[in-house]
Image (cartoon, rainbow, N blue to C red; front, side, top):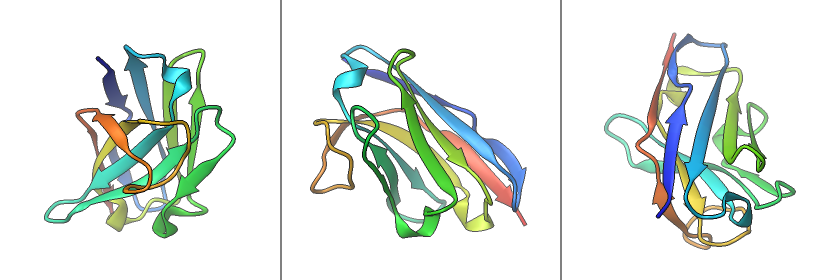
Length: 125
């Protein structure tokens, strides 16, 4: 069993920054890729970013490239999502997920088998 707990969400003005954290417990965290997805009100869930098991490979969806940075600290069993230059369209609930394998990338090619409960992010204009 894997538990993922996100934190760090909140209300921020456009142009501001937030850093999301995801603490993992259960399986050996360092053996798996990790990812972040988000779901805005009334929209489908969108896969945002991923990082490989050692942190050497990352993936970003086009809309966040250059603004978001994913990282991980395997000693702390934690993955982070640094979000800069936030826009109102980044408003969503953000979820962290554990990959089934070691490589970083979006579904469906890369699968994720556990997700946290999410942390809400609201960006005001």
